Image (tube, rainbow, N blue to C red):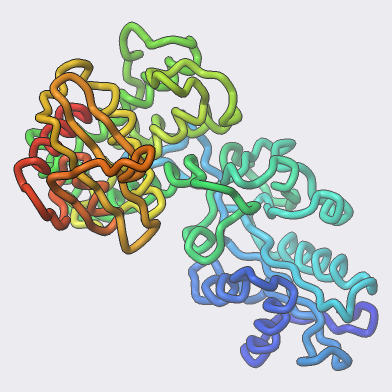
Length: 448
């Protein structure tokens, strides 16, 4: 196809360097070039739907690039496979679209998008192409808000209006539900707009999906009965099935908190065929419930100082991060909390759990312990345990007066995260080890 003196054709291997240069120019500061390289190497790459616009007047000869890959899927809430895992119906994803600034205004973006959509319509069975972008631009190419066709955004960072879909002439059922990006999108580039702080629901989703991938691998190798009966060393006396059911109970309780506006009198009854199914339904239901509300929206909680939806977003991210790490360890996986989440989890364990859950039964001796996170977001806390209350200070000095400490516990954030939650951890203890042990025992009582 020819457009405005540019020839549109399928990308060839020799084009890779010029395409990379184009992407770096168009997306300065974003790793879009690395994303495209990862897409090319992934199983969802469709070489026939990676197009370039060739114009010899442009440095490098490549004036534009667009690609559609099989790296998105619609997760319908009630479609399960024989082992209780949620089925994801394949979709196509358009990303990225790039036009060299020297070729702007020639209609090249329209020509690339229309050509790649026409090829997808002729040759692919998937029912939709989804993307994240400017609605004013893509509306001209036939895209509509994804919600109009029953698809929901894959990330809380993506504005609802920016997540769009184009309908392809596929036959058969058209899936509805939340869209899932391939893992390459999460590792290669963060979907959505810049976000200050931790995107709690994204962290929740990534650790839960990571656990589901691990469970699927182990089930395929050993069968569901063997996997579910595996003991979890971090939770003595519990099996994988027990931990999954524990999380599923929490899911139902949290949803009841949110919907009823108060602590539920009892956990709603379980729904689902087995632990894997109940866990999968549960975390998705919690994610959807929290996604439908803004973080600053008032909500009933058990926290003395925070009564907003953000409390539950944070709490669910940490509840799952801890237990998914437990299950990963039991099943010989490798997931662990990222450093920023781990540091925040230490803060949550100290302030929220230790600071509120023991009442007047702290049983301390007045000893001070400093906790220091390093090799990541640097942060430190000073904790003084008295007999009937606990002091937790972010700084080691209060109003210019040093807080004396008997011990210091230090380590990388993820190890401190494990330590405050009573897990085996590689931390360094200096000073009086008994003072550190008293704090550890109080944390275990508070966080159970």
